[in-house]
Length: 220
Image 1 (cartoon, rainbow, N blue to C red):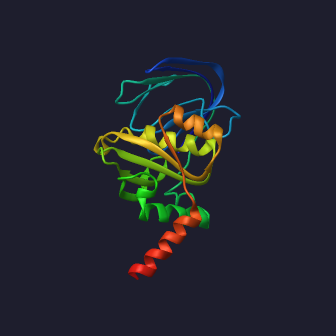
Image 2: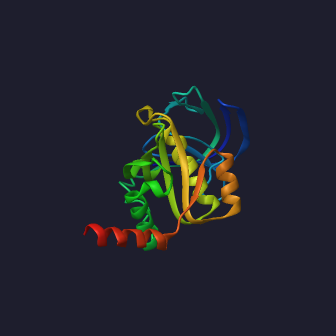
Image 3: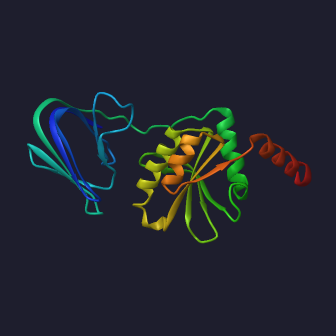
């Protein structure tokens, strides 16, 4: 990972045009090619970013970051304060707590409880941004990207949105859509998800566990 602290301006051209005026910021370049611009605040969300795959044109005083969709982000450096590179290695990923992990396992074993006709493709589908909990195929042939949480909050919707944006670069998946699954989903999170075309599903953990126990009794 390369970390640059610099006084810079940033211009983006693509689906719309935006500009960040001159200020001191952190430019983060990840090993997979993702470039993110951060300010000193706002938690994890960058001010602007370009997900991989992309190409960085280094023109000394400015970079142009381009992706296959024709979008471009130009970073103009006015003063570089710090420039360092670090090898982080392979990250093991986020470890879920016991309930959330088992909830994911139960849903993968019975995807039809989330939506009729869903067929499991795989669990823990790895992306440049981290592992997607579950991938399924729906009866229309769409790939369904599923994020599983115990409590459905806005940060979970944002996480799923980033996965969807990244996975849309993978043409082998075809048409994709998102599904946010939790034991309970907060109204604000549901509103945000539905505004982005993401399906929200609430499930009962105890019912799922009981269903699995019945299956073991019947078929064990």
